[in-house]
Length: 251
Image (tube, rainbow, N blue to C red; front, side, top):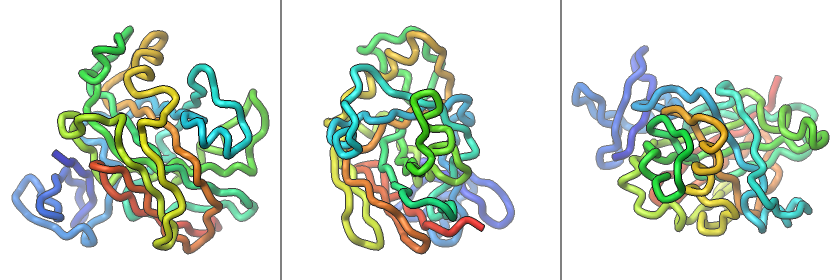
């Protein structure tokens, strides 16, 4: 099932996808254009922890002139970075390199501590698409590599849907694609991750407890380009959905 969380008629609703429309609990059907989309975190709790992978695709590491990591390169994100489908992301006035990043996002479904790789999928509630923008102008050093790069308000659209884990038989074989103003600029596949989803859950839960609703953003393949105000960016993941976002100039 595909879950969504929306604002409509002054109230917040949980909804499901039904023949291209949004089905509310009271039976109303709404057009996707008639609502305000929120991050699709229901029916899970809000995330206590958002973990994001850097350089988890070898081709992307090469694109940025970095060596592929030998263990996960990870950073923490704040919840204020998250916005929903069809929302706008602000580009800082001084930015010269603002890159989209199409990523498969894993939503934890139950408390995970010292999980074995072979059991990892049983701890997942579902998956969503994320566009984890990077403002690379602010990259400083290995001590503060991603605070201003990755933790800006509105810089991480996610959605449209949270897709149940049972409806994604193999998350490690999903095509990823990004278009900017209708032109394909990025193509990849989750099978090319350096550290796959079961590995990441085993790795993280080996030293920290993952809670229901926590997010793991699994990195992006190569093909990132600079985005300008007015650009419409669509990050798509096979079986998960098409996440639409518009760039606006920050005041």
